[in-house]
Length: 94
Image (cartoon, rainbow, N blue to C red; front, top):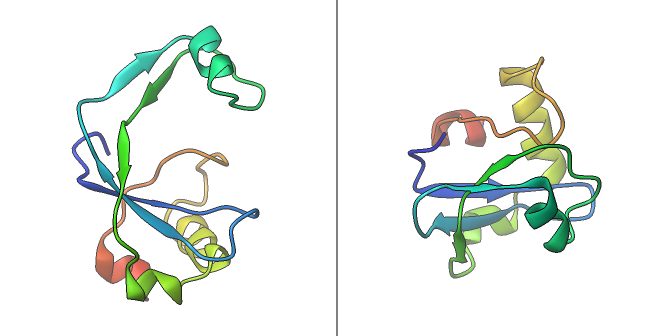
């Protein structure tokens, strides 16, 4: 995951998925640093990727957050909510 060039974000608060470009090396943030970024109920240290927005991607405008969640659940059923999962474009589009 840490070598990913693109990140697809999704969630129950988002109608469609969003694609972002990884804009640098991973950062290790403390619980306090994450709290200052308004992350809800942080616990421990986090590895975070700096992201920059990409222009709207037509493919993702039609991809619901619920679709991305189902792909994650199918490919990584034991992963925790919010945990990153690496997938291929082929897997994401199925």
